[in-house]
Image (tube, rainbow, N blue to C red; front, side):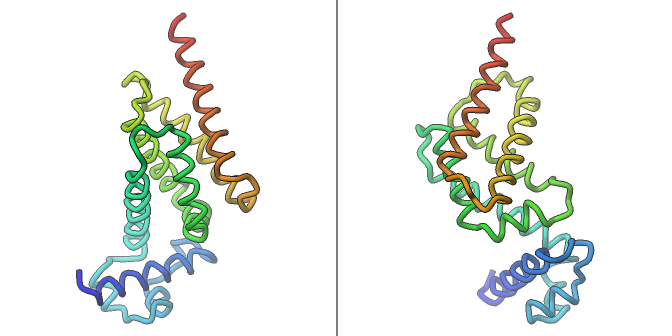
Length: 186
């Protein structure tokens, strides 16, 4: 991809994020995106079929960038370290995550997909020792609970430190996993 293409895509992504602050994706037209980005419609259609495809691209880029960020953390680190790094990443990209977690109308599909990716990364690095047949249920529980906590943290403008929140999420997750292991022994 050449520099012009990268700039065009960046302008479109930034325009989409700005427009999503006030509108749902279904209310954003290609014309509006192009006007906001300062490009013409034919240029838009060289890269994307519609605003939904652009949104999908932004979502995948966030997941990829988050994974790249978390890969840099040593495999021997604890789950708290991974979650803390993820929370710091969210806080450092507050506008983007606020829009993507609260303002898109895809019924929390993206946030759950993002957190599921993060959880799988943690599991791959830390070997959480969850039986394979129980992973979908465990992940569903951990993702939905963590998503609710993270959304509340963003909604309250980060009133709790990212370190405290990472410890809380891990403590709740550990408690849930210990309860599972205890019931498994019965």
